[in-house]
Length: 315
Image 1: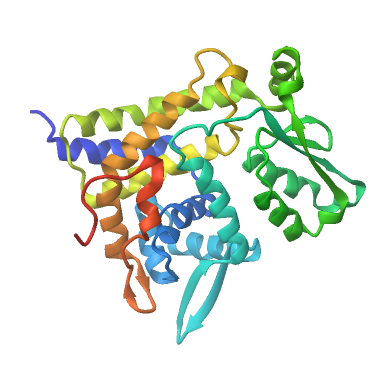
Image 2 (image 1 turned 90 degrees about the vertical axis):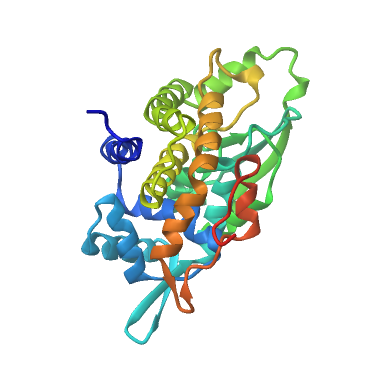
């Protein structure tokens, strides 16, 4: 007896829950960045607990994770009667916006050969590991200890980060023009040392192996249930976020041959477009705000991956 396509998609979504490594605080950050922030909402903790049950997280784990995220300056909460409501903090908004620029990009941005270089001073030692982590998430590599490089000259997001850590006066920031090099050989060697492209390539390949079967099923005409679409969309972004935020998105001329990152980004965009409307319906049916239900996504949500066509919840 054949398995109905609807049931097959549910099984595939549940298998992803077993295959994709999940840490509760990190998964909640993904849900906040991908879903809640897209609606511009402050949500009731009780409704978040219900939503996270789709991933096997119980109430205690969600409460503990939200408390930790508040301590880590991701979230900000307040009470209304006996109910707790949470939203992204100012720092959480900055982190989420910076990540969104990479995660939902339609492809690598054009590059003019210039670099943004940071040289950390001795006074940054007390926050250096946390600062290093945030810089890596912003696409920086480390060609040598205490030196960070990124292939663009965008400065405001870095300036805000340094101000948040209180180290603006102990970091030297300048631009470098790689076009002055007589050949790309030295740059390729630096890139190979500053970023672990072999590990990135392996992670992108694993990502494709996990999610390509889901897209194949959708392209065969299967329409998933809202809960399954939400699980797939969240796991898709959770895993893609984990890999792509470590990817500096360097130009093709500096990348290894047969680079899997481009294929992973195309897959992400296609799968996201296929499930986003149903996934949004599920979130709007479960999450609650002080005013009632979750409002529709903000217009900027539909710019993700070069544009989300198709039906919109509430249309």
